[in-house]
Length: 278
Ligand SMILES: O=C(O)CCC(=O)C(=O)O
Ligand SMILES: [Fe+2]
Image 1 (cartoon, rainbow, N blue to C red):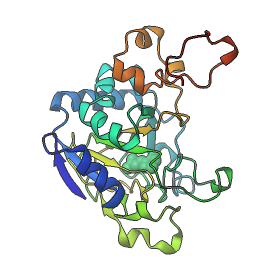
Image 2 (image 1 turned 30 degrees about the horizontal axis):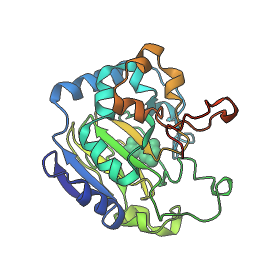
Image 3 (image 1 turned 180 degrees about the vertical axis):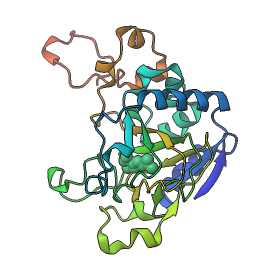
């Protein structure tokens, strides 16, 4: 996995890595120590109880460990630091190239795995996070253009021991769900990093969180970005106060999907108003 800094994170080079290289890159130096500490403290506070839905729980249910992987959803409502993270200029530049200039955000949530917590099953989050039910999606898997990008902002040391995300370099070119016989665990690399580092990957690459065998928590802010016409996982506009939406920056309005008018009641659309339409 190639490593970049804020200065070397060229959109062209990173997009090429995502499509034709390993399918994942690591970028460091985008966030201050204070921002990372603040984000982590908010996530710890909001995940004291394991009472939110989560997905990809691996063997946790059989092992009675469902409380050891916790999600904190709707992070935009939980601290201004998360808005700055979501709309970081480096993400905006790279993703405008990768997903189109009007790309949106599908979800911003934290994944916290406590010590002893289980890993997930290897999966893809493409074309949508629920592709584990392929029959509910169109036949085949089209990779001629990307339909998502995943950002993982690392908040605790991500080591092999603490369960740093595993992925198979180059697997984004397979365009299929990983199978048992693919030998995921023999081929995988780990997205190891320090608090503040960012793993950016193409969600069709085979990946999963790994078990946390360390003595500390393992949390990351997971942001999912989508082309403008893909339905987001979280209803962020519905969950945010009106004041947040009213005062959102231009980039944040784009991320919330407010620039794209469809679906729209076109019967009621003003005649002669061609804004956003041809
Ligand atoms: O937390 C991680 O390491 C990865 C999480 C993930 O891939 C997911 O929930 O889809
Ligand atoms: Fe995933």
